[in-house]
Length: 338
Image (cartoon, rainbow, N blue to C red; front, side, top):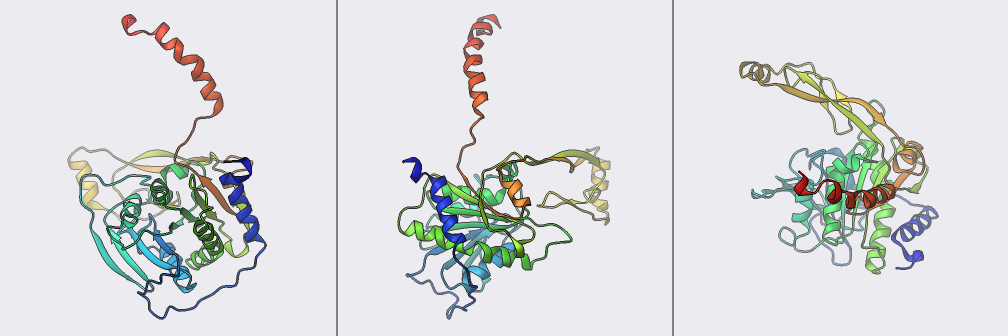
């Protein structure tokens, strides 16, 4: 592939094209909610917050009301935040039909990666979707958080199986955000979904990446799309010994704490009686990188679009170091010398 036709350049041109077009919201109700039209592309939605999460429901409503897509949903039956790319190996998955207006939907007893794998397999649905969208996550997925994210894994699993995919997250901030922001986030990204599907139809969409999109907190006044790259920002986590599961509050998917003072006496008694030790994660700090990265531009108010691949390569200076280091291992630490 020539440099001019690289995935990064193709996606950059897509964003430039979209930036020059106005988008008028369309809320046309489907005449038949369960109908699957052959002349419309099929989009499958999954997430890691669970099938009842407001982010997923808002995304599905926007997709359905646009009247542009056949919409399938295959999502976890409960919250599966931060499970990364975990898959179910030994046990069978249970898929339960769920009523979601305008879509064919199933709640699955598995992880986001499980849901995507099942949904694109032809075992659950009659056809393979043209695009998988994983989200909308409550909380951003930038930098190192991408590694932990079940939302990103839902898209990555589709990419593993040669199905175009997008992971979508909204930078939820307690006290500022509300559930209506999920609708705005979905509407703001609708042109990207349509543009990706147009390229897929023309067979010009790059197959060696998938897209990770983050929408800023003030989505109503976002600054437009910005092509970015994965940075190194992260929340630093520690551990705190507790006497009950309620102590210290609940860790939300946004990497913030929700205080909850109601005691869990059963859990407390269990840990005391049997001498168990109980620990909970807590936020102890953060690392924010500057420059041309996803987190930086998200905080500036842009909708960030980052092409991702399956592999995480080490920095070039690490490669150079180990190129010199590895031959010395056999010379200095041979098995006969141990």
